Image (cartoon, rainbow, N blue to C red; front, side, top):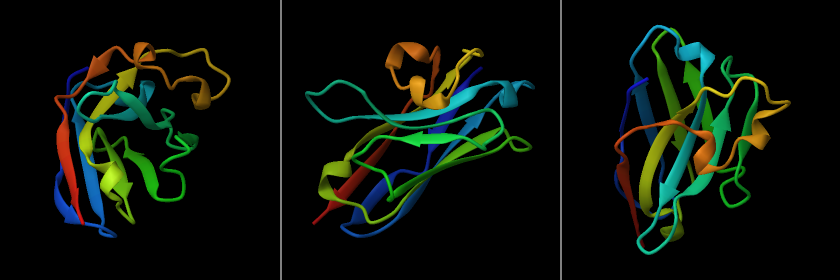
Length: 128
């Protein structure tokens, strides 16, 4: 699956953004989709994950209650709604797809290595 993320930008502290990730192919609903982010000098870190139906989600503690992951399988798109932005949310955000099927819950799919397909990243900058 090929992925393309977009929707990043420059936002003030406390603002909101919605990131989108469009996927190619006809089997989008079979993929677990995730969002990760990377800040300069740090490794890519997990942000959020959603199962194929959109009914099960999991978030990193740092973003819980502020970020919302969702998907529209009819549009082959996964979203990340980011609210109450903080300066520490500044990062390049990547969407990713995992073809792992047999997992009890998506909370067990938070490692970079769990995801085989990646988008190109979209920059989010939060100004204070």
